[in-house]
Image 1 (cartoon, rainbow, N blue to C red):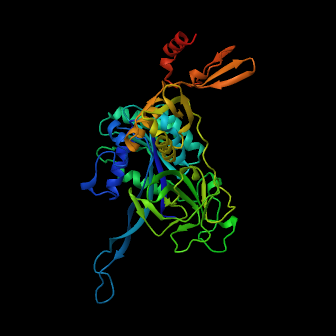
Image 2 (image 1 turned 30 degrees about the horizontal axis):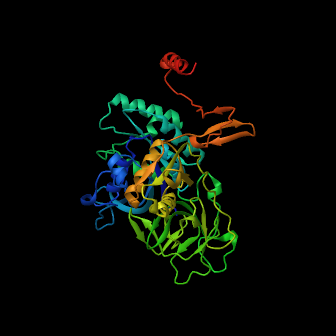
Image 3 (image 1 turned 60 degrees about the horizontal axis):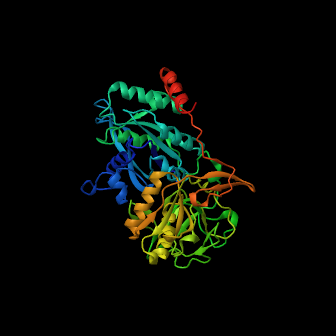
Length: 471
């Protein structure tokens, strides 16, 4: 485990996370140059088209660190005395490290992707565009990483296009935020690759190996092998931080192993257990992300990879659940389910596609656990589903994925928010205009509590603007 480093790249949207990830893949030789293309880890067609990251993307990289060791060498004469001054030769000692990177989205609508990724790693590279400085999602992501107990490395990106003054200013901003000296903030260019080798060295030097995370809920010392006489207190355990559906292998769970090992054994008896749903399964395949799914013999403590469960019912596996080698093992801390803020009803264009739409939404929820939906009915459009989303962009992406990935054309309502309506019987929550009670005595709409951070010289105009809109 000492040679494993698990980390994420987090940043505001368009600050260059995916481009930097490309350079990391190149520098470590994970992807051959002839196979590289921009935004390599953005696998969805929509991500390539829109130029944004929608889904987190894990990948395992191998990095060889070379250390030079001095060895004195002298040439001796016949009397045993040195005939020339001793000199040094450098012997190269290579140490191979496994670097598990999770690239994350920058848009606030996909913040739940970031929060789940943070639970699977020990460190984070907090990236800031030198030409823009610290932005809203920079602060939000920093706070999430800090609360998760991660080691945070600050890096200023786009040093190839920014002026020296901009780079210096961004370094100082980031050093103030992290509470470190400006010299500890790295300068990189995701475009040219400048500073990337130094970043890799910093990841190895600063981010702790698995088992040394500050959040001790995830680092309890447990067994390191799967034995037939295991007890619930000494079980192999892995946290499911994402998943996808495969027609042949069933639900594929993306996991971080926190204790023990999960192996492809000829006979897995008893089978592996799902803590929340109480499901059982025998794995079809175990492997890691290269970034394509690559099978291997086992996943050990501290590693990030996948387990193909063979489960065909998407509802049997939940994001945040724990896979354990024995029944009754204590579950790992899961994820807090986000509350939807935008509500839209979907109806299939063809009524015969209702069951197909239901299946598509269930499979999408495997890959996007922030998606919530319930059956709905419209007098004109027939049966459909009411979906809850984390924002307008989240809704748009989901609608596009239903059409492209499952070939189902839908009609949808206008987006709405949730209202608190007072009636004679009390208060009730309503997120669909058709459900408004006729006898309502008052309606309350959502409000947002915001904190505005800005330079002191802009305080006056900002106060005037806020008072103008919200007197």
